[in-house]
Amino acid sequence: MRWRVVLAFTILFPLLILPSWSQTKKDPLNDDEVDQVREYGDRPNERLKLFAKFIEQRVTAIKQLSSDKKVAYRGAELRGKIEEFTRLVDELQDNLDTYDEQHADIRKALKDLVPEMEKWEPVLHLPPTNPDYDFARQTAIEAAKSVDEQSKTLQKDQDKYFAEHKDQAGKNGTGPS
Image (tube, rainbow, N blue to C red):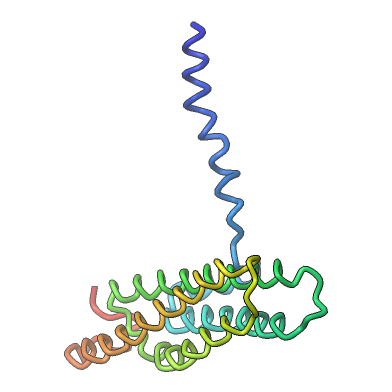
């Protein structure tokens, strides 16, 4: 009988703490931003531009924090903004993957997005070296490089694909299934 209680506890305990553990990874979007992303769920170009806008807001915050030496807990603030940047870039990359698989026509968004991405990495190099955020910065730099490369490749692939499938270009933001 006692072994059943121990067995039940060992199985159920991880299930009970798992939801609280997963909530510790803070969503980089606030409630208003989440609503905006949901609203544009069926419009790929607008959704991608929205992610770019949110990333740009984090980039601006990183720039400001890098130059403002008076901010209390500057290292922690920078780490937080850099981590938000990374999570947003990862989310953008996931969306790009999804739209690529669906053959969504996202050429309009990519046309604006690709030049903007080139500005992101230099901003991540602005803050001075600091153990509070150096690992987060390196992760963000790698994410920025990755999404930049992916977007440039995707832009070429999209141009080629929709040149071959002109009848599907621009159709409700998506191409053939």
